[in-house]
Image 1 (cartoon, rainbow, N blue to C red):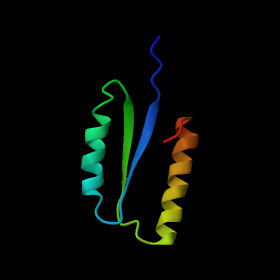
Image 2: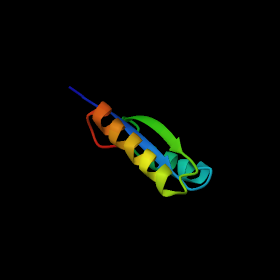
Image 3: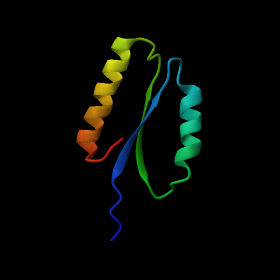
Image 4: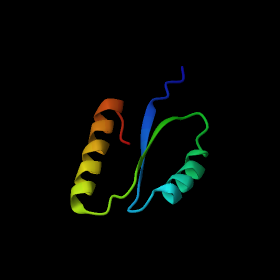
Length: 68
């Protein structure tokens, strides 16, 4: 039985995140059988935004049951 869990992938950037997301898509293409939920976190350019992003990542790990 093939039990593939969905994994959440975060593309975190201090800019628009387009470059990070494009690179990420190239990397994720190496896993065609995997299921991904992709979240872009642009403009993470100060400590408060980084803390908020880290909280989202922790929540995703709990929700998905696997590390993002």
